[in-house]
Image (tube, rainbow, N blue to C red; front, side):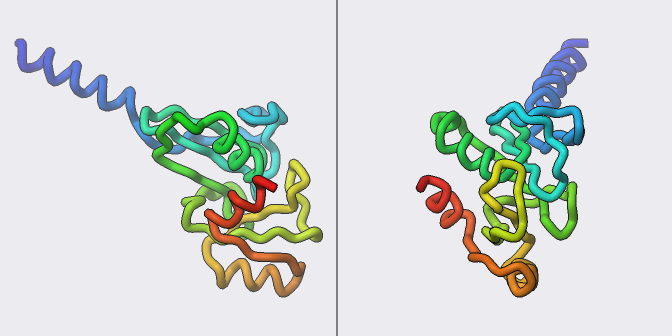
Length: 144
């Protein structure tokens, strides 16, 4: 009987620390940083800590500002952002290419969108103009 109890406790601990994204309830969930309701599927983002706590954002710029302001001492396991070309689909924010274009509005006004790769971002940039950034570059850009 003791092995069963031990396995049950271990299983419960592992399940409670599940490090994975949480579903964003568009129109219901609020942005952790600015408290606006998350409605834009092309610009939403999320951070998941190493303990499995998820923080949801209505805009990429809110996520980046939150990381810079509120989460300096928190270990982050996942940085996620919506793919502009696949609204509602979250991808690894650290691997994305970012476009800042005055012709594409984002919820908080930074005109910032994320793309799966540079080729996809270049294609949209040809239509809307703007400037491309990597994950590291967009963090520096938003510090200004």
